[in-house]
Length: 310
Image (cartoon, rainbow, N blue to C red; front, top):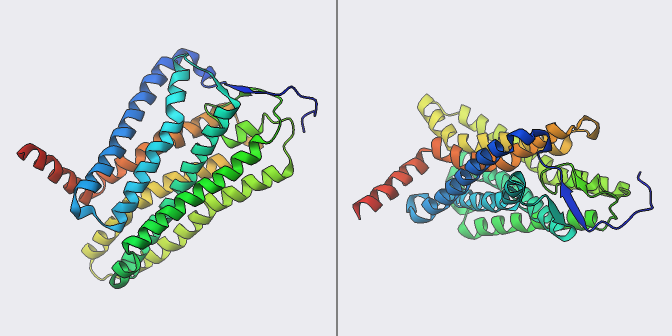
């Protein structure tokens, strides 16, 4: 526990990618390219789902919500990270850091919960197909999406308030943005209640949905295996293959980031993990759903073909 004698800190400085000084321009170009691809990919997915009536189904409704959330998620982190790479700004105010943490966590938790809801959608579609349209009515879908967003930002608010009520004795954030653990490390003292709260929120946002998804996919796979024809099994599994791919990467990165013991953390490891879940993961969603999903590919061809014809 740090000493109780402290000078009030009103501004933080990001250490950023100081270990890679000679490669910062290269990193800027790479991250900017990935960021543009992420924005373009998610905007295209949302637009295609809105325009093409064949995609007006619960599964694609949740995908459009996820793409929108991923877009704002990356907006919270990457522009400031890019500006720090070209030396424009390495500092952030106390209020700015709190705001960034709040929105980052809010969208991150929302994404985790949305993936669980999408898993439930696939479970109903495959394991209970005759009642699918009755269970997954549009009103139910809208309520699920709204509840997920409200839960995500409520948990984020609790976490942000708990952290930023603490006094800070240091101003150097050994990270590329305001994340929970790097900011907590700057506090003059971290009450045990903060560690317990962080663990509870991590369990609710990561472990709970991941367990739900694990059980859902066991039931989904067991149902698929009961299908007699190989073609039928392949076609049914294809409807959830994209979602399963995104789930594995998303929850894998989140688990490593928030459940890895403190003693095992190194600055370079943390930066590598954070780049994965702030730059790579948001790009994964449009890439997987455009490359591996035939319905999205067909819808894109229809929309593009329609534009050329007009």
